[in-house]
Image (tube, rainbow over all chains, first blue to last red; front, side):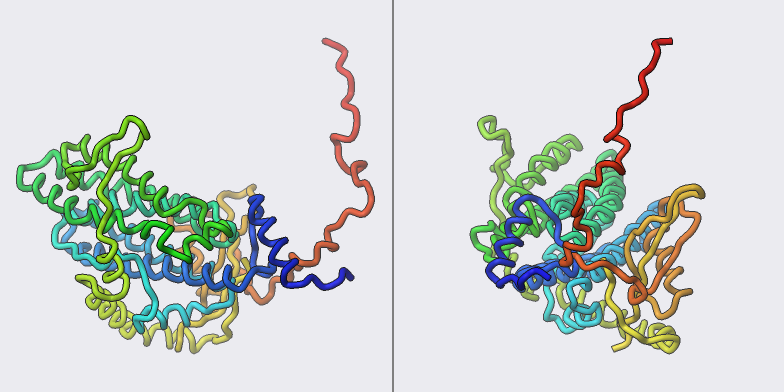
Length: 315
Length: 92
């Protein structure tokens, strides 16, 4: 037997391992704050996928044509699957899916700001798939490199499916771009409404966030919020313009010197309000989630009668 | 509450002749439901010919912190084909 390591030695070894790119698996020694930060991030991420079904799901009965309807059903089903993958990845850290769901339903848990905005037109379904999911994939490909093994594995699977989400969203907007003046106006109006909420998704500058600095240090995430946002802007601005639409920011222009697009920072107070429950649709989203949870209770109870021994995934 | 079912580890075979590969886990109240959940979660797109589910509780595993378990105390290079000379070719 080796002599017991001191907590300081454990921490030093852990930080050295993570710094050289080694992965952490369930059952490995990890600092308590690493575990807590991951449970918080992965829980919020799972909730975002679950709530993310709602703004688009409402358009399923109205999707124009059978193919668009099937596509949208498949996309919304993917979001449910992503939520479940993430809940189980978080469970490997010792918090149950049940507890996480309870925190979502009670309003205690946070989730992505962007799903608290309304989707009044069909163009919003396209713009969410194209803009919001592009921003999500940039963030998630970064998280696929996370130091926590189960998180990285879940992200790799999710990124693959998100590629389909982006393409179907772009296809909707590109179709509108070739349509009537009314359809073009509807698409531009939607881009205008989603631009700043999408920029906010990657979070405030890391200098403002303790969680974020710690997550970077322990390589839970491998890029700063600002880097992720800049990658999104550099990728999406040329796409928006190529379709003949405008970026709703007069100061958005390419800077030769840095090789990046400059853009106006979103309103970080708005992000704070929306994340903390005071966005345009927070109440509607949670009410809808609670109703679905109650409506499905009899199914869960019928199934639970068959067997009821909770356990935790191994990896 | 009523949603905290057991978890099952899922193994996926994409075509006969390939190995079953570990893909992740599902929650389910029994093994038959676990197979259905696994199909919806891991086989709704890519080709799949067979799924296995195993109760997470039934997996016996090594301990990452027990580094001694895999320690190679002696030189094991004699087990590696690269440790030996390849046959010469005669040029034909």
